[in-house]
Image (cartoon, rainbow, N blue to C red; front, side, top):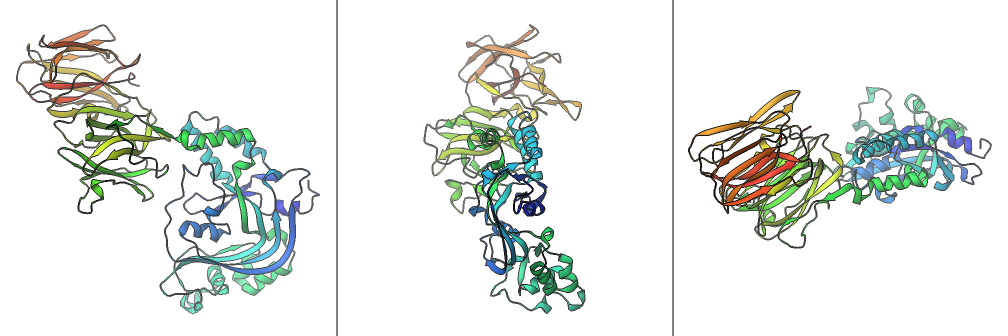
Length: 575
């Protein structure tokens, strides 16, 4: 291998190193060699000696960063497997321009099948794919790409280059006066020298740091441009030559064995990344897609509502893009009623909605930090409750349908690469539906993953259930925390309480009711204990958990003078 023509030149240069693009201040080259040329490979490496000056007008800041590095714009490069998941930051448009001079000393063209990954790189990928869980594997692979690079050149020019890139001001050109850029007594300055050599000094309103690749930068600062250029052109100093211009490149994952490529492609495939909940509301075609913006972090949720229901919604992402509003909220005079903001690292794990016919009457959101939004929309006649959660996954967006005045259907869409460390999936059992003020005890759980019902207070007279008050106990910061709900059902009467042991949980709920009155409740625990209270009237009911090993976690319902409707929220036992 070492005797192949030009091989040593490739090894000495940075041709076989990956380039990282996704970091905020990227692109930059990895310090690690990710590939080698295979044995008995025919590749083209040709010496040359000429200079060229190139001028580009990138569409936005992201394109400008690529071109400043000597690479094509992202749209001219093959897609990376993770591109749909970890998208480029929002591009800032502007009057971007880049001018660079390239000293051509050699050109290289190699097929990707003639390259092989280094053993160390392959092992890093294999180790990342052994990490438990989809989200864990994705994060581990992101670390691999950050260390080894995301792409590698296949067709490139070696030698040296100078580049300056920035945004031109109004009516400005690239030609300027060096004296207006830096005072003449500032001393040697490589950035000033590069700009002056490219005849663009003093024109940029916003700029990147001028770039020099290859040659001996100290010559430019000490002896000037001519000395640097003469050294690069006349001296056969190949150890100082660098990849000055890339014409074609490929993701470094294409270097890997086919089996590993397939695993990575499946892992980052859009289908494996996104999960959709069952839609609720009107039986209508979906009018908007919650995954249309790609997989990214949510910054805030804007809601439009009144006392009768949810009128519209929009989701603003961390990169500034927005999905929605769709109907009512698009009218300029219809301002958002409220905003639920998320800090970096926060995401939505639960979406609550109350549905009546073809209208979403009310909504509520819960974060991974246990913060829960206010309940938006109708607060007294909200309809049937539903809770959407997906194993702790982060909310990506909301699909749904709408008309001119209301949201008529919703379907949460979840991203599987971001999950809460501890979570309990919740399933609901609806006992009945009624009117009265809506309540949702999720707000009082503290840490939902460790929360349990520790005490229930109730009116002990032979009347409809009232004075219904629940204490939830959880662990927060290593401490046991107790949170008590308001008393639901305001009718007067003597009250009593029932305390459950720490490891005691309700596993069955029985009672009697009519359409809009809960007359009697009876709870059965895993210890065989029971507690019955209320009036022996109405139609009997009995509910077990939807799945084995579930326990009663909290209540949702409506109340006025008495409990008018009740929904049971079941989940796994507390952690």
